[in-house]
Image 1 (cartoon, rainbow, N blue to C red):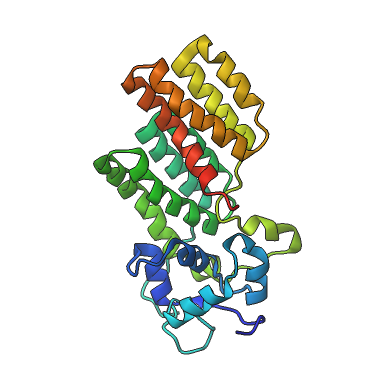
Image 2 (cartoon, rainbow, N blue to C red):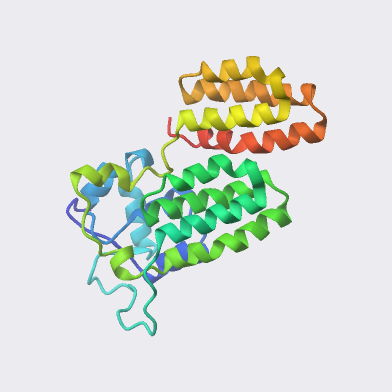
Length: 264
């Protein structure tokens, strides 16, 4: 593999992003999303350090027919497609996701919505939607999770069929914007996470939450916050009814999941 090579998504690759037809692993899927048709292998390696050594994964994606070199004769999206997809509107997509999550989850969606707000590119939004796809069944009953995903899926479809200029042909990032093209997840914001926990504990426990909130405010790293969340998970059933404890934890669990997903 030459470091100056550029890859584009093939029709098969776009189909996988749109519908998960081929059930790629999360690692390969995230890398596939980030293949943009303009970045060289060297540039991808430099940006995607959170994904580890990506060269074997690129080889695997190429061998599987998900990516190819421009003009290689692989099944790339045809310029003669019968319909030209509309320009993807990132702001409208984020607004739609916010509305769906708030309607479905109420205050429990606060942290996930903040993750959506932090997104600056369609590729980041695709990764966040992947996270939501995996997270919803862990937080909600299966029928409810499936109902929410059906509402979110049109955004994923629109992302998968962005116009070529948006999906693969935009101007290359400058040095000042390179860092914003990824992380694979929006950067974990410790202060916002602590704010959500404070809000949740005050709503559930009232003034008796004061000491626990002081402990949350004293945390300085995601790992310290995770330890406090472990303690809160054990404490809630002792301080509240089972139903109240479960409801409070559902609001906190997305933060725990986000910390667990951080690279080591």
